[in-house]
Each structure stands twice: as C-alpha cells, then as structure tokens.
Amino acid sequence: MHSPFVPGRSERLKWWWEDFRSARFSLGLAALLLVIEGVLALFGGSEGVPEVYQTLGLSRDGILKGWLWQIASHALVHGVWWHALLNALLLVSVGMRVERIADWKIAARVFIAGVLAGGAFFLLLPQPMPDMTLVGASGGISALLLWYTTSSPQSRMAFIRISAKNLGLGILIASGILAAAVPWMPQGELTVAHACHFGGALAGWLMARRGMGKRVSLADLQKARARRESAADS
Image (cartoon, rainbow, N blue to C red; front, top):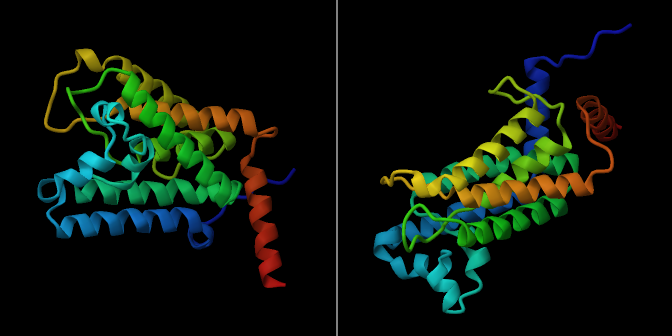
C-alpha cells in the first residue's frame, strides 16, 4: 500500500500561485471593491460623502423609500479602508478555491446569493443598533466560504488545523447564535452585522448541499490539479 501524497512547501506554493492566477472573478471583484473604496476615500469617505453610503448602503429606511437596489449595492461600499482590504483578501483567498473546484460562474452565483440572503437576514433579524446601515461584502464572502467547506469537507485549512467541514459548520452555528443573541449584546464602537454573516453562510451551505451530487475530496482536487498541469506541459 502506498502512502498518501503529501506535497512539500514549494509544491503548495506552486499550487497556490496557479489558483491565484486562475481566480478571475475573485480578483476582478476584489480589485473593484478596492478601487471604489479608494475613490470614496479621496472624497473623505463616510464623513465626506455620507449620502453615497446612505444611498448604496442597506437600511430599513432606504428599503421603505423604495431604494430596492440597496439589497445588492451594499456589498460594493465599505465604511473604512481596512474593512475593504480585509474583505478583498478574504474574497480572493476563498473565491479562488471555489473557482478551482467549479468555475467563475458558480463563484459569482454563490457570491450574489450570499449578498442577497445576507441583506435579507439583516433586514429581518434584530440589528446591533437602531437605524443601522449595512455596508460590505461579508454576506457574499460567507456564502463562498460555506460553499467551499461543504463541497470539499476533507480539505485542511492552512492556518487552522481542522477540516473544512468542521470549520464551516462551526462558522454557520456560531453566526446563527450571535445573530439570535444581538438584542442582549452590549453596543460598542465596532458593530458587526451577525445576521448578514449568518444569512450569507446559510445561502452558501444550502447551494452546496443542493448542487453537489458528489462531494469533492482532497484526492479529487489533487488529481484534477495533476491533469491541469500535465495538459499545460504538453
């Protein structure tokens, strides 16, 4: 019996670079988010042009006014630069794995579904503070993460030594508990829309459960990568 193949550091870096270059949707969307944040920062950000965030960000008051585009547009703006940068990094890190398993079209559908579901849950569930405006792509990123961990449950996380399946279920359960516990949480300067995270994660989990007839194992990913590399070398 042969021992399972364990790639070395150079091989893992080669695989990461290949996935990174192929992540067209994730890289393009991350670049768009950073460009939007950079342009808004030139005009003073949320303090300089608050009307932009009030128009594009998601709020119950905005929906009541008929600004239905907010259910999607809130994912394009971020309140501060570090929020945009963090979401861009997470988007590329998770999105390139989804694009590796499936393709950019599925990654786009999962992201959009997560944004819409996260926005809906934000509107329906208790909010951390009155008249809160939701900004950021966290709902879509949560959907991508749960789609990946559900579709490839045997994968191992790089910095957290647990399986993808356990990580995904832990995030889904924890975000649901936090979303339900919002009314009893103390308010602080940093407000987190747990309902948005939970809605996006739930959407990604459901899409993966519905769309994957056969779960993707670590061996499947290694075989698919080997086929791509042999095709590229030929």
